[in-house]
Image (cartoon, rainbow over all chains, first blue to last red; front, side):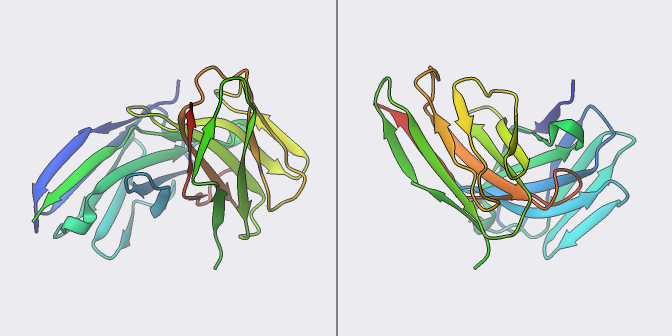
Length: 113
Length: 113
């Protein structure tokens, strides 16, 4: 069964700290892996998309890496800010007849001023 | 602005009532999806559509129905057969079903009263 796991479920850090969020997936045959941000009561905002042929993607203070062989992806946030507080979700795209993204349950990040 | 519009933002349903959630996109995407989000759980796929007049059941389709008469629109009906409909519903779209970035709407929160 294809599953995606995110650890930890919650994380609290002081402002300015660099941090890493983890995402693991059981089936390495992914097309891509996507990271999203979700604010309370809101929809998902796409942050980064890493294709299966890529190792990493960067956008501003965010850097996402992908290691298919180990079934892992990480989202690195540099110099965290209170505005980064949100739930971060990763999703593995396996394509095929499912046409489906498999989501982790998310990591709730709180950045304290 | 291009994007996905879900309406209404909040919806209340009485016992035994059918309700319809709207999802419209102007991104010219072929694929559209409906997900359900419950506290402490990941997003679960209800239905998806790869092309007009065609749609497929996801993991939790029981008690739900959809239509895809236009490329831009993918409404979801929550029927009286859905025994636990209180949840946050998210609509998404992508260019194709695999390997490309998914974009999400702002969600509809449905509550049974």
